[in-house]
Every structure is written in structure tokens, then in C-alpha cells.
Image 1 (cartoon, rainbow, N blue to C red):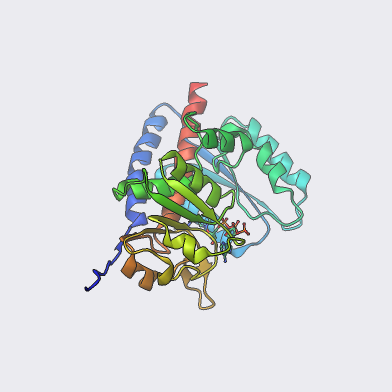
Image 2 (cartoon, rainbow, N blue to C red):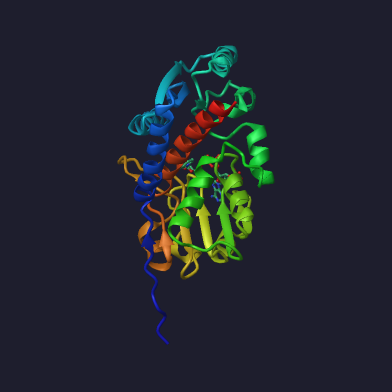
Length: 291
Ligand code: NDP
């Protein structure tokens, strides 16, 4: 018998981000009528080229939504104290609603200490232990939500993809992407497996997935023979090939033939991450107004 060949519907993250952004822009306009302009401070330390691009893109998106942003730039030799002082000042500045520390920080900086110093109400990346805790417990109406994880959930929601009862496999266990995504999928009723570099048989685990989220930064890690027919594939990874082309963690063209839905790189999860970051800035400004 001939097998029906799946050909994955490519999820347009840019389009969904535009839709979410349209709503945010209206909220910013409404706040503006009450004299409030959402404002985010961005801290960039070192000279990581990818970070430069991410910061530029985030600030550009903020600008298009009417959100003000200010860049605080430090050299790669910046001290822990200098960055901490900057955060303390921003915590106390009532005109700053969000503080974003672009990662990675230079190796000698204690990242956990920096993140824990940010006022949880201004922690728009949702890295502070209080915000991580609230989002892990669930049902706590946290003002801040994990941006990539929530961006992925929105992509699934807007694409009409059911989650409850489905088997989800998340490849990657970082605090930035893997863990919060696994938690959100769990809250939505999926049965979740989290894989990482020590997983013994990655192919076997991936083949179980109805929803496969890949976030490793390892270009082309997931090949078509690791994907079940009809699976939904969310590719979070971003790698630059030597020629400069940006690619994800999946062998996109071949995996697309097996998947029912797939996100491209670029143009999939990336735009959603930025828009959810902006959502957090707007929510932080709204919460501050109510204080
Ligand atoms: P990290 O490097 O912090 O984590 C990578 C994870 O992948 C780790 O848990 C690691 O396992 C796992 N891993 C690495 N290699 C393998 C392998 N061969 N098999 C199985 N698991 C593996 O990265 P992040 O989570 O911060 O980011 C992941 C990717 O997503 C990067 O490419 C990053 O650029 C991208 N990204 C994209 C965003 C977007 O908006 N599109 C937002 C944020 C990140 P272990 O823990 O055992 O080391």
C-alpha cells in the first residue's frame, strides 16, 4: 500500500507576530493617551556579533510599536559591579518599565547574580527566579511570561494545533528555551519528554513526538528519519553557516515532507520571541500604572 506523503504547512511566524503586534500597538496608543510611554532599557556587554544583531532587531521592533528603548553598552572587560550599579539605577528609575540584559554576558560576569538583581516587575526576559517560579507553578497571573516559550505556544494556538493529550518532545533543557517550553506544554496538557546532549537515543525519543520542539543551536541535528509522519515541528535553533545563511536545528526541506506543520528559520519562532518580549514591556508598563 502506498504511504500518503505529508507535506508540512510552513507556519509563518512573521505574519502571526504582526497580528499580535497590531494588538500591542493599540495598547501602547491607549497608554499614551494616559501619558504613559512604555520604555525598555537594554544592557549589552561585550562584542558578540549575534547579540548586536538581536539588540538592534529588538530595539527596531520596539520603535515600530511606539515603545521607547535605551541602550546601555559595556565593554567586554566591564566589571560585575559596573553592570550591577546600572541595574540598581534602572530598578529605581520610574520611567523605565523593562530591563533587558542581552545574553551571553562576558565569561567573568556572574549571570545568575545579575538576573536576580533585576526588579521582577521589570524583568521582561522573565529570567528572575520569582518570575520563573510563578510561571512554573502556573495559574499565578504572572505579569512576565517566558518569551520564546510563550511565542511557541502562540504559534501553536494561531495554527489551530491541539496540545492536550499529545506527546511533546523538547530537545534542549536550557533555562532560556528548553525548560520553560516544556513547562508551558505540560501546563497545556501535553505529555512531555525533555531531551539533551546526554539523551541516549535521541532518534527514538523524537520519533515519539506529535509535537517536536528543537532548541539546541546544532544546525541540522534533526533529520527526516527522526520525525514521525504528521508531526508538528517547531525549530527554535539559529546557526549561521560559513556563507552567512541562517539555519535552524532541522533539515528543513526534508523534514517538511514528513511534518504536518513546521516553522522555518528565519521567520518562525524568532519574530514571536521578540513580540512576546514587547508584550512583557507593555504589561510591565500597565502593571506600574496600577501601583
Ligand atoms: P543552550 O546552548 O543554552 O542550550 C542548548 C541545549 O541543547 C542544551 O540543553 C544541550 O544539552 C542541548 N543539546 C546540544 N547539543 C545537543 C545534541 N547533539 N543532542 C541533544 N541535545 C543537545 O542554548 P539555548 O537554549 O539558549 O538556545 C538554543 C538555540 O535556540 C540556539 O541556537 C539559540 O540561538 C536559539 N534561540 C532562538 C531563539 C528564537 O527566538 N528563535 C531564542 C533563544 C534561543 P545539555 O544541556 O546537555 O548541554
